[in-house]
Amino acid sequence: MALVTWGLRRRTFHPLSRVLLLKLTVVVISVLLFCEYFIYYLVIFQCRWPEVKTLAHGGRQKPVLKAMFLADTHLLGEIRGHWLDKLRREWQMERAFQTALWLLQPEVIFILGDIFDEGKWSTAQAWADDVQRFQKMFRHGSHVQLKVVIGNHDIGFHYQMSKYRIKRFEKVFGSERLFSWKGVNFVMVNSVAMEGDGCSICSEAEAELREISRKLNCSREAQGSSQCEGERWLPFSAPVLLQHYPLYRASDANCSGEDAVPPEERNVPFKEKYDVLSREASQKLLWWLQPRLVLSGHTHSACEVLHPGGVPEVSVPSFSWRNRNNPSFIMGSLTSKDYAISKCYLPFEDRVLAIYGAAAGFLVFLILAHLDRFSSSFLFGWKLCRMHKRR
Image (tube, rainbow, N blue to C red):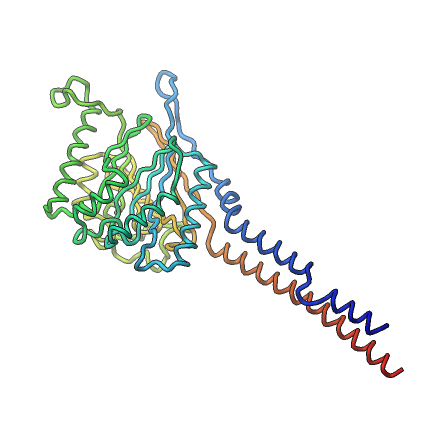
């Protein structure tokens, strides 16, 4: 009788019982759903559009444009892109972007360069594959506009860029440099071409910017000016300058915040035409365009700088876990005369990993607890068997 009872107990508490498997499955699925899906809603739901003054003289309300600014997505290519790295980081960016799109409902989204990591040397087929992945990750409805700025990883540094690479980029993302909506003007600069050495690409880029400057100046002047006859009038509004390279600054010494460059790196001098634009190119852009706000990427870290004339610049951190633990993007509420910006953080990678680590520990605990019950029942049955034999 004791042997029968012990056998029944052994079948009830075998190491991989149905109850244990059910518990493990529920825990694994719950953690995966939370870390790979719901956490993005939980974090981005806390972000709010900043308030901006909307009343104009005469009591009329100015339209507000809701714009998102992100930078340095660095989609990996076929050369340096390990499949697991691609899967992990691209899923993170896709979920973050799609969640922000659904929760925040922006009207226009700007990506400030370095869309791809290997655009500067990718083959035609590799480029097509990367573009297809980008379009899947950053898909959006027709009511949302997506504008992309050229970065050095998209076409190469100045010594690597070519008309072929620029045309290839513009064929996908457009060649528009001046964009106006709801009375707000945006100027999108190919900052890689602001080398100032007289190369054909650089000369064309500067000529295009001088023409944009003329159009903006016409919008500031009274209609009927001889220089602006027959001109399509732009909104009377100082532009927002968007580019990949930051304007010249000596270093990130004056940058602060949890997503700024680490303190030990803040005093490292920047190299002109590599880390930032040259002094000369920066002065040209400020003089030609007279922007009210500058947004840039490239450094992968946050910084706020005040340039001569009181022009503020915001360096937008990278959107990818590959470049930083705490990625983010900028939310802007803009009118023709005013603006307000705020930052929206994405889930921190180390916190997600910590959740996975805690879940793994809990699974181990469940298994050990089950095995402990099994071993206890086994010992109990073995003792009953010994007692039966003695009798």
